[in-house]
Structure formats: structure tokens, C-alpha cells
Image (tube, rainbow, N blue to C red; front, side, top):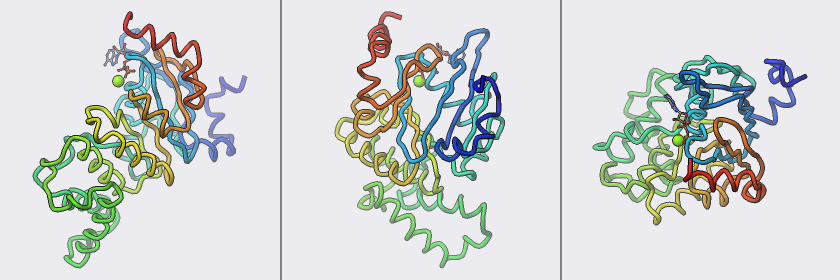
Length: 265
Ligand code: ADP
Ligand code: MG
């Protein structure tokens, strides 16, 4: 059976093209308990793909496996045809696989422009040696400004990050992530903690990002998932329960009962 062939995904060039990120029987065990079990995830290039499921389903564990912050107990992760199952997390951005930074990685007392410039410099620093020159700095300012524009924060460029609302900080975080020009973005609950007034704008922003890139996001806010995600994978108890577009999975009786049971588990 093809499913049991560990590296069949690498050997199949067609799948490599269609699916930018794939896992094969990905599992993570904590002291005999499988938080993620035999997950075959496939993220199609150019889509916004949501990973949803009730509390304890294994979404965060799965996210941490994909970003390589947690080692897998078994299974395989392929990104753009490369096996990244044992790749160091710090090597992933250089391969075009970005993740949203934690809020704590934003420098609160720098301005927004400076924050994005630092991210741009960080990327350039790995490629060139001459970025310190003042003329080059101005180039970074222009690029930083256009990134701030793209996340709707141009008017705040000279403000310090600490002055922003939580939702706008998340937009800044996206700008610093986009500074690394990722091909694919992994977002862990981008709407968590974001006020009502900022949700629509942030969702539209992620929708825009998804036009040129691939996005995989763990998300609790199902209205946002319904609005911007083309594909949804529903997890329950460490396994994939259902997959499809939001309309399909939200009508699936297995999914409905998984969510209904959430409070009673
Ligand atoms: P979700 O993000 O979908 O709510 P998690 O991935 O956080 O789910 O957790 C899935 C399951 O794995 C839960 O039952 C949780 O208690 C367990 N789990 C997660 N991390 C650990 C850990 N470090 N040690 C032991 N159990 C864990
Ligand atoms: Mg979680």
C-alpha cells in the first residue's frame, strides 16, 4: 500500500508541485499519550488552509511539530519537496517557511518603522555584509515603509510599538514576518486576543497575504476561517477527523458532534 511507503511523497513529483507542505503519519507522543497521531496533512500551494478542532485536538502540538519547535516521535514532514523532519527551526525561514513571531519578539520601544527595518536587516545580514552603510539604510526604510503600508500601519510608522493596540501589534508582527519574504506562512491563532474592532482588518490582511503565498493557520475563530480559508482540516484527539472547504466540514455530523462534545470532555 502506497501509504506505508515512507518516502513516496518525495518520489512523486506531481504531489510535490501541488502540495507545498505535507506530513506523512506524523506523530507526537507524550509519555504514552499521542497528542498527534498518524497525521497526513496536505497543504495545497497558494491556499489559506486552516487547522481547527476542539480543545485538546492536537492543533498546537501539530503546529509546533511543523515549525520544528517540537521533535516528532515518528513520521515525516516535507516542505516544498524537502524532508524537514529533522531540520533546525532556525533554518526554516531561509527555506521560505516563515512563522508568525511571538509578540515578545517585537521591540516595544522601537518605532514601527525601526521594528520592520530590523527584520529586513536581519534577513539581509545573512546575505550581504554592507547593510550598515547609511545609503543602504535608507533603502531599508523605503522597503519597511511599504511593508507597513501593506499591513495598514503606515500612519503609525513613527509611533513606538508599545503604543499599539493588540490587533495592530499582530499586524506589525505580520509585517516583520513578511520582511523575510516567506513562500509559506505558519500562523498560530492569529486572532487570539485581538479585539472585535481589529478582527475584520486582520482577517482581510491575512486574506491578502494568501493571494501571493501559502498560509497554514491554527484558528479558533470559525467566522474568520469561513471568510478567508479555502481549505480546512479538522482535528480531534490527535487525528484528522475531516477535510474540505468550510461549508463541507461545518455540515459534517462528525465535526458537529466533536465540537458539541467539547465542553463535556
Ligand atoms: P490544541 O492546541 O488542539 O488545544 P494541544 O496540541 O495543545 O491541543 O494538546 C493536545 C493534547 O496533548 C492535550 O491532551 C494536551 O494535554 C496534550 N499535551 C500537549 N502538550 C503536552 C506536553 N508537553 N506534555 C504532555 N501532554 C501534552
Ligand atoms: Mg492550542
